[in-house]
Length: 172
Ligand code: Y12
Ligand code: CO
Picture (tube, rainbow, N blue to C red):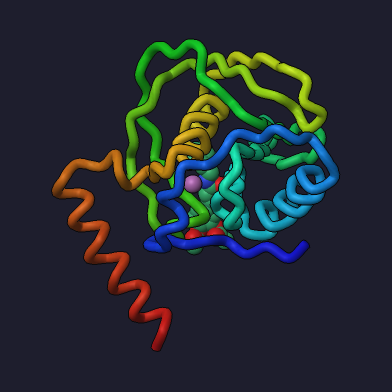
């Protein structure tokens, strides 16, 4: 399966993704194809809508304490739901669908998430730190929400101007 990253301002990124009901080969093929494109593009999180599949699927591969991104730590979440959130944290986020831009975003510090694995088994995970932030960022994608939507009016305006310029330069 050949996938490519959907980039802002593509309207697909605004679609609300649909619940997954079949945990079949089609789903497994998509998950297997998402991992290499995420790693190749230096990503640590990717939602299916970012590769044009509007289903509630996301993957995460947070680097370990040595900064190594190892596949054994890959998390695949299907139909994730946040069941608990507390605290507050600020982190400079980036997104494969919004290349070259990083902005501080407020998130909950800790979350608990219920999800299904690729076989449809229900799982629960409690997370803090970078994993917690990444989970919230990727679940937002399932609702058609991007991290740039969380910026102040002034920072969003600045982003739009700089992003337009970047797209123009990329075309030239
Ligand atoms: C904390 C905050 C946000 C997340 C969501 C996952 N975000 C990413 O995986 C971002 C990846 C990213 C990679 C880039 O590098 C390349 O594209 C080669 C990048 O740089 C450029 O676009 C030049 C930007 C973002 C998880 C945790
Ligand atoms: Co993103």
